[in-house]
Length: 99
Image 1 (cartoon, helix red, strand yellow):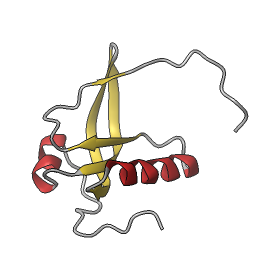
Image 2 (cartoon, helix red, strand yellow):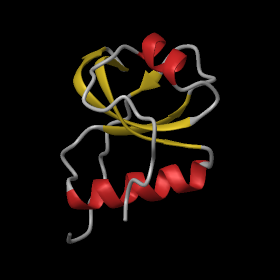
Image 3 (cartoon, one colour):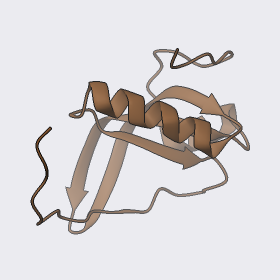
């Protein structure tokens, strides 16, 4: 089972500062519903919380499972102690294996 999490604000699209207020001191699995790039930076305009966790390893396990099932979704794991989401984009130039 992926998300056995309670007390989530389901289906609400929020900005990062709003999410931090709802989930203090937690690891979050979030999806960027609306995002854009500015130079090397990825700007997340609209986010949805998919899960809240006290353990980063559990958050990453959930990330990996959802990413495996839906690789086109823009997913991230962040801790709410981060005041700002400074995301640097890295272009992948290598060859990926058969999926």
